[in-house]
Length: 506
View 1 (cartoon, rainbow, N blue to C red):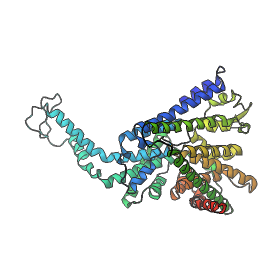
View 2 (cartoon, one colour):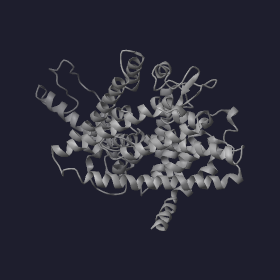
View 3 (cartoon, helix red, strand yellow):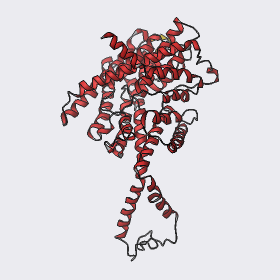
View 4 (cartoon, helix red, strand yellow):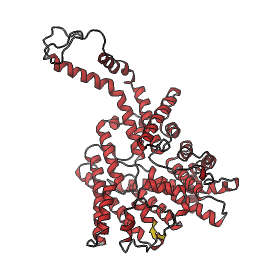
């Protein structure tokens, strides 16, 4: 859907018969239509599909017997379709949170196989029983009048499968096994998102579940390994088994992460900043949700219209900001050798309009990030932040931080991992460039781009162990472990710095 929209936008931009206002109008309409479709699916069909779904999984795994509809099949369908639409609408959302919920639904569905199979066999028996002239209902005699009738002598493969599906699998149709399978499914969704089998296991252990047995440890690890392997087969690359790519590093990049003892104070600064930004994001979102939701009617069609209107307003604001932000002249820079656009078709398109015209031999790197793939943008920023201007990194980080704050909580299936990683990488990379220019030339900005991701994830999600392991697994660089541990621990408790600042101001 993103490719289709990009192709049509390119045609409009290149066509001299269409004005800039017409192009931005089409861009807004496409984004608003996708966002409203995702929201309407949730509000009119399955309201539980709105949001990431992690809170519902977390509540269930912590023993809260709330709404048991969070694993229904209609919710699975709406979650998948709605996530595709919301991510395609250019909103500051990601797909990782919904993937965790989708995995939990699939895990819960495994416990329903015996019941569904038994019901299916009963319907078949009733259907064929009314047409059967055989005087007995035993398995040794089947309906002789049926075209496919035959005598079954002894146990067959079909009988063994039926017995296995209805009797032996009934062991998993219990609340205890359902809880374990929900944990396994949620962990697989998280592991596939970041390409971190061990990180997914620790995410469930550290953040989601309050009870974790030893037997579940191995089951989750094996399931995560199988899930990430299937994703690697899909990519046709055993080194690429994730949705969010934290960069591809080879032996020639051995000096991309240079960590020294004298840089520890800088790691602490990044951690404190990530904790403060994470705490500010949480409090701002709570303030916005509290003041916006209380203005909604309690129920009925008017409440639905208010929620759709909110989605439309956020979508229009996001589209306008993304479209007009690259008009700043500092977004243009001479095109370096080997610089590749995420969307090659946009190179001529962006140069064809005055607002995006950067001159011959130049490139609008800000437009490239905003209009291109955010996953590819994350990969490029983490690999080498110095290929971008400092203003570009700060602009991307600040813009997506504000947009993510406004978007979080509206009635669409969405997650915040992707925008959080992009914000952390951009601001961390900008900090690394500043440290390199002002403090020491031996500082590597890639290290601080990665630590920016760790700090913001820890500040927003309050995760520690799983975030540190995710960075190691995602990059394949064990040398980032110690800086990541320092950063996430400081960021986890960076909110106290925020409280201290507020107390001193008051």
